[in-house]
Image (cartoon, rainbow, N blue to C red; front, side):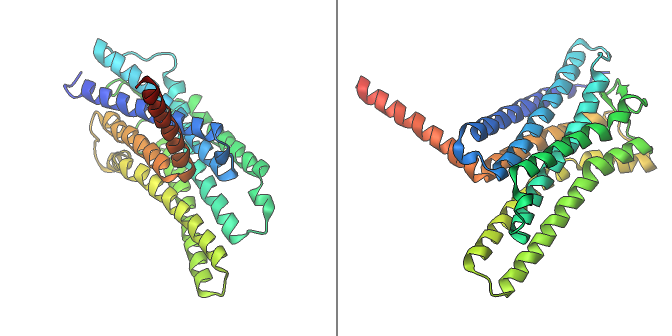
Length: 298
């Protein structure tokens, strides 16, 4: 049954996913086109932007499917419904671990600066490839075991939220493991920097360590947005153990998920100095060209 709030929420999700796609594309274009952005840390950030882009494109496909069915007031499972859910699970895992790769790289450059192997571009590419392989393998059984089903009320294909191996597996692999790893890296880096401040260490080394710590703190802040706005999904999982969850739980949960993805991309864009610098450079060039054009016409 179509509720009065379904279509407005579908449109809100459509706007959020579209905005996320635009910001992710801008970030990727700036990283690829500017020489200053062609560093190993920026490559890792580019990997994150790519995962966010694919995640947003998958979410957009979800929203278009849901909105179409809502407008037509039909309950219909298309041929890509299950595959769409599988890609969503897989790319979310890859996205979360992309933040871990960023944090791990900065941790290694501070704690083990002499071990150049860990900082090599080729090694980081290998880690990126491994996370992508892991993401697509870890949820591959979902395509063949019937865990993913079509939920007519929510117009979406997902593993149903109920006490089951599948839903706890999703929560553990998608959220708990990546966030535990990230917070462990952050806490260890904080402890190391504090120890450096107590020892006799050159100002330049301490300054660099604190700069890397600040970047890892930004990553933790960004992922915290994902966690906080993903709480409705987690709450519904906990509720399912003790009581009946709302009929439109997926619609509610995914509103927050889509908003969080947009907020994360905005945060990533505004806290990455090379991207901000490149964007300001383009804007200044466009403004200068416009001013010159106006002077010529005048």
